[in-house]
Structures are given as structure tokens and as C-alpha cells.
Image (spheres, rainbow, N blue to C red):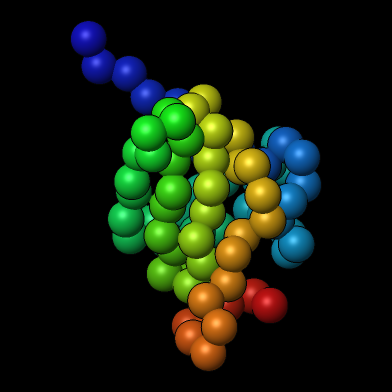
Length: 79
């Protein structure tokens, strides 16, 4: 059986305006480059736009603010 879930930010941890009012994240908000599932079932996702590290629950809810990588900034970075 295949499945999936949407990534979302219902707790408003992202400090800039998102594409969708319902806080479901899209490719216009973050450019996902890598995904790692941690032993606790959460996901760490690498974003190219910031670049940022993003930490999500097992159901796709953003758990903390995007983590910037000091000294690195993409032209698409909104901050």
C-alpha cells in the first residue's frame, strides 16, 4: 500500500509568508533536496531555497522554525 502526507506549518513556525493560506507547504515555499527519516519517526528535510534544515513530525507537521545554515544563502532566500 502506498501512502503519503502533506507538509504543513499550522503552528506558524515559518517566519515569512507562505503560498497557501491554509499553511500547507508547496514547492514555491521550500525546494526539498533531501529527506531523512530519524529513528524517532520524525523527518529532517534539506531545503535549497534558504538553505534551511526543516524538522517535521511523522505526520508532516513542522516542529520548529526553519534552521538556517550560517554563511550560506541562496538568491531565493526570503529572509
